[in-house]
Image (tube, rainbow, N blue to C red; front, top):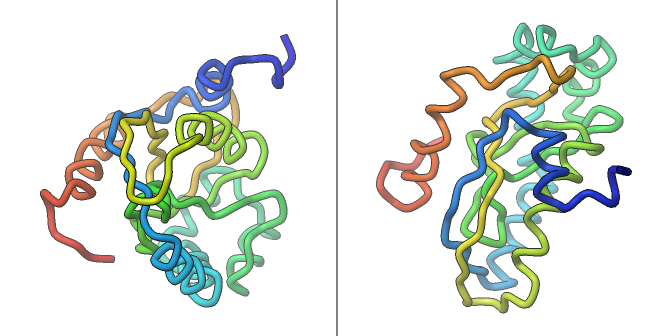
Length: 175
């Protein structure tokens, strides 16, 4: 079966088997709010996040297989070739540009799989409307899965519920 012919759910499970998927209420925010956050991310948030990854988590990045060339891109605040910075909780649904809501992952297949799974759930949802969706929730920071032998660790499993509670307004804010 080709990658494209798989259902979005199967494709997500095949590409990101170690990423929890949580059910949550997705509410489309106003276009003006989303645009302001996107502008802040595009002008300074992305660069700050990438530099943060390099300075605070370079050993982890190396352990996950990021190359010297990838790390050099981060040093300049640039996204390494073939990667994207993904908002774990989308800007369109109350997400923000805090580092704990961002993850660096490969554009293909990981980032593509997340959106192939999430986007159809949002079809037809207008600004201000809400709907229950299942949201893939990778850990903040950097994600790189080297192969099927990689398994979700206990720490990763425990972060998703805490982040979901914070997004629901149960915990405090902070970068």
